[in-house]
Amino acid sequence: MTQRYKSKPEHDRLVRDEAADPIERASAMSLLAFDQLYEFEPVAAEWLQHREAFLRAEAVKVLVGRWDKVAYLDEAMRLLHFDPEWVVRAGAAFALSQFIELSKQSDQYKEQIVRELVRALLQDKDWKVQESIYQGLWKVLKFGSTYNYSSGKFDRDRDVDWELLKPYLDDQNRSGRRHELRV
Image (cartoon, rainbow, N blue to C red; front, side, top):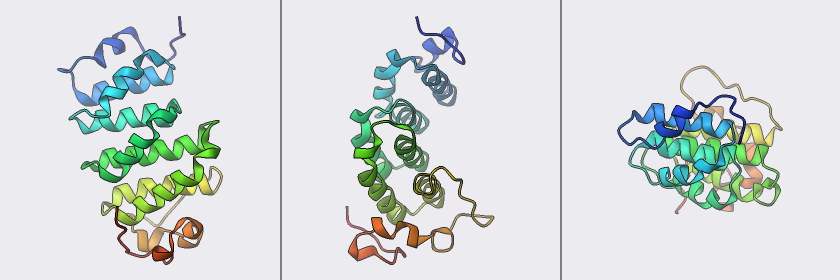
């Protein structure tokens, strides 16, 4: 049996309880993931399509960001670009950057993931998502350092170092400023 450090047996039931509060369920999944209780992968995989945004966000963070599951990379990128909720897109950005940073398998996927994150940074209109994307990119491209930007609301025109991202921009978007990409 796997040693539990943070999760408790009641978390096992909570993640499956559709009547429970979504935030509590997401929290429970996070604790189960920390304890590497991989038997909850099917539950997390179901959550990728859940109607509750917090559960979709937690699922992608667990499957891709914590458990390094390559099988869910395409779904993480789909959520990054197309989920209607900002919290899910931000969660997908976090998960993808964590995958690059922590996964032993990340070398073969790093360039593609970074390009998708840069593309999402250019496309997404929500500053909270842009901030999450850029924090992840900074950490990955600056080898673990934390990005500190000016106080207040994140502004990609002011707060992004486009020179850092230039190798990952396509020809149409070399300047990195307010260009929309076609998906």
